[in-house]
Image (tube, rainbow, N blue to C red; front, side, top):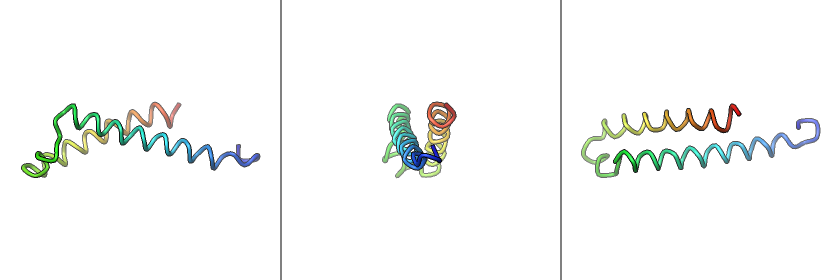
Length: 69
């Protein structure tokens, strides 16, 4: 891919796919687990902890499904 000049486009596509999947998963998990803006206002530390947990899980899925495939 590097020799024929397609590596950069391939990497851009993979990055875009991974970013979209990550954002989608985070949004879905947050909705499913009730992590809302009202929780953010009432319990900021709890909201941050839950969002970190959700992001970590979503990143693991993206890494396994897209990056390491």
